[in-house]
Image 1 (tube, rainbow, N blue to C red):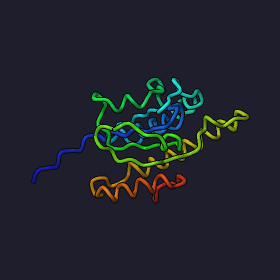
Image 2 (tube, one colour):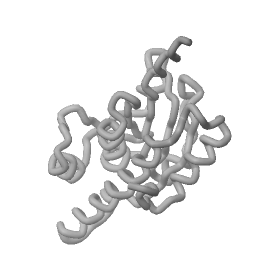
Image 3 (cartoon, rainbow, N blue to C red):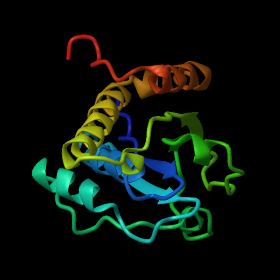
Image 4 (tube, rainbow, N blue to C red):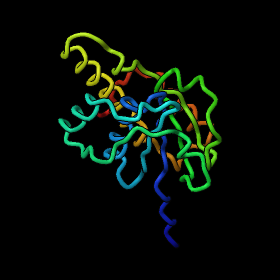
Length: 176
């Protein structure tokens, strides 16, 4: 009996309009939680051109290496040199309503919308709280995602699970 060849790492793209907060946070979390099993990317339909400073402060406080994060256009992931994508998740309602490029690899898609922490105005404590809440929600959703039995699910079942994760309020996975 021969062992099955290991599956290549899954390529996952997180989309948001500005690519400065939610999608960057998701990219960071999946890079950590899914190391070796997933390659995480993020992009925006109308990127801000820079990552929100609070995103970088928070990630650095959570011991992420922040040097490689940048706000980029989703066109980088639709050309002939783009990686074949397995999953594309929108994390903001605006990007979910836009006409997306054709993604290489015929990825599965799901909408995981949530409030934009970069839109919060007020005292610094309120802004920090909004970013931490976004982090917690994404961290919990991605913990569920990375633990899905990908090889044991048919495409329709997997799509249903992805949609359920996007509707969750970020409760930890059972047993977590």
